[in-house]
Image 1 (cartoon, rainbow over the protein chains, first blue to last red):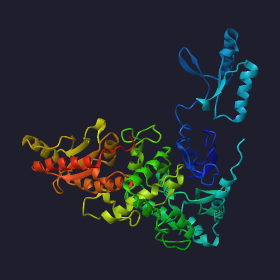
Image 2: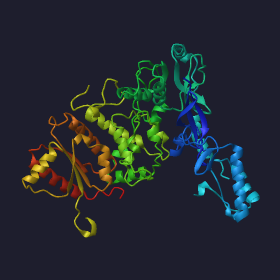
Image 3: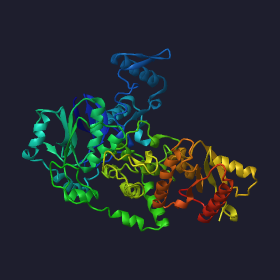
Length: 135
Length: 278
Length: 140
């Protein structure tokens, strides 16, 4: 019977509320707000309170999936990335860079979002990049 | 780039500085008892705050602290639900113990194998909580101080009907529906919660015009709320929830002679027939 | 004042228990007793079924008043159902008063199946009480 609380930051919006993950026998079972956190001061919004709901969710992706003949099939990372690069190149050849759009996310780090816009603007050459916060 | 809000940091510094490290000697009894138990549930210092922690036999207790408060009944419930046969100690303040008493009455927790380590709250803590009974029945650490009256109740009761409606409409309009009050409440255990039911509560509406959520929650807290104030502390909108619950529980005492958490043999009045006070 | 300058007609929902008060209301109808038509009657099996959630939903959905009629204490078909109502309604009225809703908008009465004139009287009285209070308009 091992019970502990691990301080972490809510994975959702940019506010970055502090919270504790309640861990029982190696499994996250609940959330407690971090009362000493200078930003959240022991309070959370509904997303913060439920931030572990995706961790063990049956629909959570655990490996790349490729849709073949209408069915999602397990694939390796190499296969999946080949698929992505291949299809993006196809669209690029047929319709040009403006036909491709990119969406980045508050769940990604700033560095990851920076890389994506570099990919979009410098590599693909499209100005069409947006962010989930604007939706 | 936003600058760090120094005022906010200054405002919470006193809380950070009052985290007390408990003297090893005064917890010798606790440390001794730990050898017989599977563990002791207490607050452990963590990253400038504290967090509920299960100390196992052999663990060093020097980082055991008493603040900031978390509702211990919640965690005890969690552990006992998974390990019903375990023998646990738990450090409890007055409100923690009262919460456990109410849970026992509702068959949610079994205290037979639980060793309660009572801690009395300081005068400052009692005042900040407006607590009427800032100590458990058996105190092992700290000195019990007198209870404090909730000065808000008189203010709210002196308001006229229109003033009350205006005040509480404004308060409930701030609600984010974070469900923090329900989540942190040591008394809320229902697996199917009425507050999540679309029939009774306007789901997905942020500050619905009619405060169904809050009225239902208040009714559920009658003869149940033990005044731990955790709901209010967790409310991002600063709604004075426990003022409402305190008023209703004062009524419950007048109408039914019942006070939540006082006596494990007193059955909750709303489930009893009239004139029966088993 | 009601809408369009017409006198205000309160909308009242009445939860009447099947065994006593609903039968009493039925008897009032059979006896052709006159009473005000503002109460929309909902038959429940026991007044104890009327939960706080139900009352709040009723007020939220447009009722200006809620009338709960049950069997006399000791006569409940389910022995103690009305005991629950007897305890619950006074507390609910206190809560309403604290948040600025007149507690007189929710009323609990006992009426047996033989008390048709009491049912008629209570319905009329309660309608006039709520009329004097005006429309609820909480958050509408």
